[in-house]
Image (tube, rainbow, N blue to C red; front, side, top):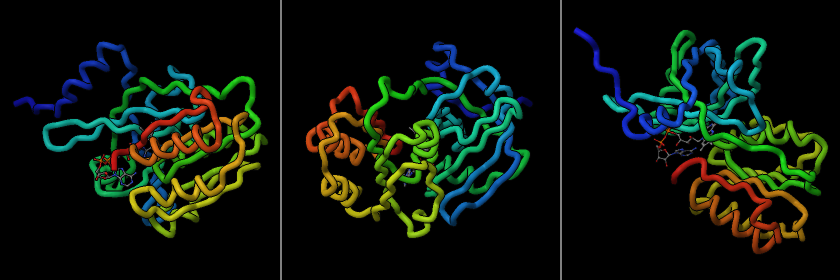
Length: 239
Ligand SMILES: Cc1cc2nc3c(=O)[nH]c(=O)nc-3n(C[C@H](O)[C@H](O)[C@H](O)COP(=O)(O)OP(=O)(O)OC[C@H]3O[C@@H](n4cnc5c(N)ncnc54)[C@H](O)[C@@H]3O)c2cc1C
């Protein structure tokens, strides 16, 4: 008797039509960076030979929940095309993706689709960056900080747990402020609002939960004076 595969549903059919690249990643290692943050190492199954990577690059990972498959965005950490390996860091909470990661062991596999990630550093180079996120976007922020090198950057990060503040933040020229998550992101919006300066020649990069992302982008536009075209804002999760 053949086993029925969980269905990817309508989103899966659309991605197939768009000729998105499908790969299978295999877990090779796991390292708990904190009780709420896990880094898994993967063999990338040919993905890195076919697809050039860029800062903040993300993929769609497929996780089974009963007879349904759900896709979730995750960011490539230290992709190494020569070795064919990549890490992915998971902020842990109660969800299909996070729970899969909590239980993942070397040898486990996960299907992924590459489509939709397309960020390039702004040209000409901005005077500086204002970067806002949380533990879900920390992998993207670290890859962005690596890419921008010595350009000054102001980084605001939302912490849900005290241990979040010990997670490694890269960036030689980064000024980093952790803000405890309170009132569904309102404390972060206030902290950013109380550090306002004329940043009209800066670039803004924002990835928090949906409501906080919208509120922060508004502060960057209206109070910091960053033009809309110089802000990349994307909700990374739905609160
Ligand atoms: C482009 C992109 C790149 C991303 N890269 C990463 C990454 O590298 N690492 C990473 O950890 N996440 C990343 N995310 C976020 C991740 O896709 C979401 O957090 C996703 O919702 C997790 O799926 P889940 O199945 O675990 O939880 P869901 O089933 O989506 O949600 C279950 C419950 O958990 C809550 N929840 C979901 N995410 C979070 C969170 N981060 N913090 C607190 N509560 C949460 C929801 O509100 C809900 O109540 C990225 C998202 C995008 C769009």
